[in-house]
Amino acid sequence: MKPPSFVYHAPATVAEAVEALAAAGADGKVLAGGQSLIPLMNMRLAAPGQLVDINHVAGLGEITAEAGGVRVGALARHAEVEASETAFAAQPLVRRALRLVAHPAVRNRGTTVGSIVHADPAAEMPAVLALLGGSVRARGPEGERDIPAAEFFTGPMESSLRTGELAVSAFFPSTAGGTAIVEVARRHGDYAMAGVAALVGPDHARVACLSVGAVPVVVDVTEAQGDWARAARLVQERIEPEADIHATADYRRHLTGVLAERALKEAADA
Image 1 (cartoon, rainbow, N blue to C red):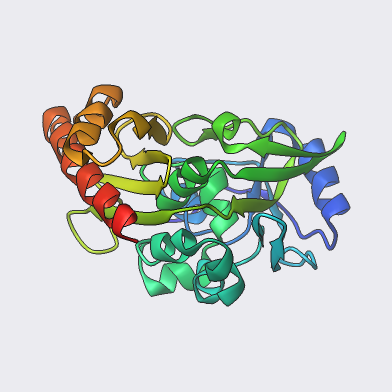
Image 2 (cartoon, helix red, strand yellow):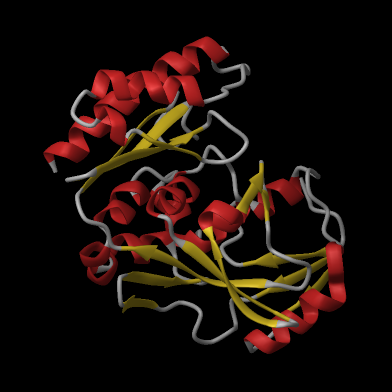
């Protein structure tokens, strides 16, 4: 399978990338790792007329500690972030989640920020960013802005990035308390049929759910702190799973409850 024809841009700076994206408008797409975009193009499920390859832009692959967390650049590969002691020290959940992303070959090329921007509600990294209350930094024709995760994901594979904007980094906050992430997939490396990331602290508890909504579903279960079975029921009441060829909606709801209880217990123990 081959993609439709497109105009290829290879900017050397962020400014050039933004200029190319702004000129392309809705017809432009960013190429970073390409682990989601290229298969979609090859299957003719996506047909951007212009492709802006940011792999030649210097300075976008950095992983840096900042006050209150870690910032991951747009070209930092999953494998690099997974191995980063800087990222792990700031937020251990990032490493735990990345170990569930696809396979090593995909993680060696795919980018963490690219996965977030792709905004697949079945993917791990959007859920992690949403759970932690992180943000995406975007650069566009009108300047730079930080978009909170709660505002970034707007629908399945849709985000609040504006036309001409480039996501240059994502920020994962450090958190007080323990974290965990668990999921169930039909085969190792597949997208999860359901998954739950959890954060439990002395006076707070919340989860983010995968594959059970149009965006990552974050549920605050602090009112049920310590009673994780009750917390799991609260999660089941908040989600709106859909049926597909892999699982019924009822099965996904049940499975999410089981995983929520398990993740919360693991996070509390941590």
